[in-house]
Length: 133
Image (cartoon, rainbow, N blue to C red; front, side):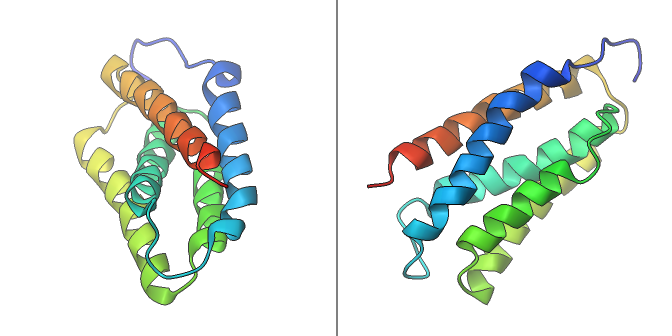
């Protein structure tokens, strides 16, 4: 990190992890046809997971494969076909690659992006969870 304070793990991980875990638990109940009404939000969540995976590692979070593991859980819950898995994976990779081209050091801007993504991801996960019948 370059001249910036480390992100506190307890505040940045708790809500998104809980939301992702809850989402992974309920998504199998939503699985049916290949296209679902919530796909746009799910693809955005996948992209966010990819961006956060890159940025948290860049900023020294020492979380290993945490965000990739969340993506794997999402794929297991929602990847009902090869095409669906490919779309979700492509979104994750897009998020990762976009931010790997933008940031090569952990800066205040990178930390702000992490915080925005964590908040947006938690919001998407919460919306998806609440839309389950």
